[in-house]
Image 1 (cartoon, rainbow, N blue to C red):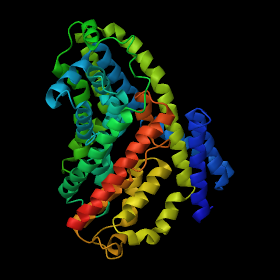
Image 2 (cartoon, helix red, strand yellow; image 1 turned 180 degrees about the horizontal axis):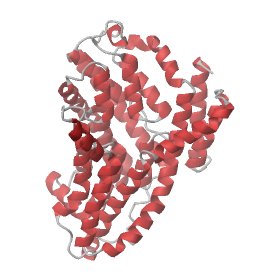
Image 3 (cartoon, rainbow, N blue to C red; image 1 turned 90 degrees about the vertical axis):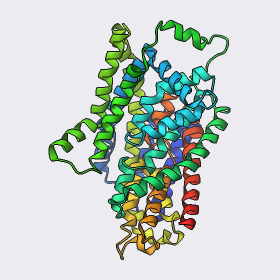
Length: 456
């Protein structure tokens, strides 16, 4: 199947999946796998290859993000059980001020996601978010949306995050990364501003399983007293900072020339799984210093029980993305790129948004769109056809692609399930929060890119 029927089939499968989850209350795992299988059959994938396609999509999560989720949750639960999360929440509030907890957690997320994938970042920072929400009596949903937005902005806009840095190289800006970083940082401001106000708005309208029942809730001070003496700030911070620094080391290998041996070492230590294992080891030290090492077995058991549903639903989303890719959706977009080329900077935004909504991964949407656009100094590229022939205009295109790669996060996106599950949200509420937040950020970002393009 090709052309418009392919697009219609994709829209129908996505709609069916959303209705099954939201309206019919079918478990997301079954809904997504069912929609994937139906889509594979309808678009005409060879029957003998469908099981392999499903298996490939499912296995890809276990080879990439599954261990990241598990070790990230282990770190987070240790931070909670030792009181370290409360210590860090106190420190953050002292720095930003108690009246703006959403802003505090958003800024933390934005900084952390520059070297770290947003999925990993949310898992790492989630304990601080929960403690801040409890201390300030602010909606935990509002805090979750704010954290997710902060992480998402730098994930799609700012090198050395893999997506933006790859896009910069593919459009010919590998030697102008500071320009991309500067424009990406600038566009982050309107994106985060819109997300900040949306987080405050939606926090009043959506409740999560984390909401505190006032009749039986412990006061924050009672929670603190139950830990006795809280651990110190430095020791509390190490399980979070060490993975970030290590992943940052892995990222700079794409920017700074170095010896082969050093590059190999940095790349190894910078792998998310290795970095989080290192953070877990520092969390063990935190358990030992707080006299709670005996809790490690129970913490591990609790982590595995909680992580299981998240990992399997995320894997189901990966199956849907793989089926869509195998169906030729990406190739169809590439072949018909000229149809969209008259809309200027909105063209890369639209292509990235279509790809993001179709297959779930922001990084794939960014790199695929950058490949379609081509290099700004290539006379035969789509970039030249759009009139984007200077480094500044090329940087604007990279950021426009990033804005599209936000739009929108839904059931085939691993980040959607990480945010909703770790925030105690139902899938229905995930559409109201994470999906709508990504739409608000994407639209506000591309408008800002357009206005900046008029100025520059």
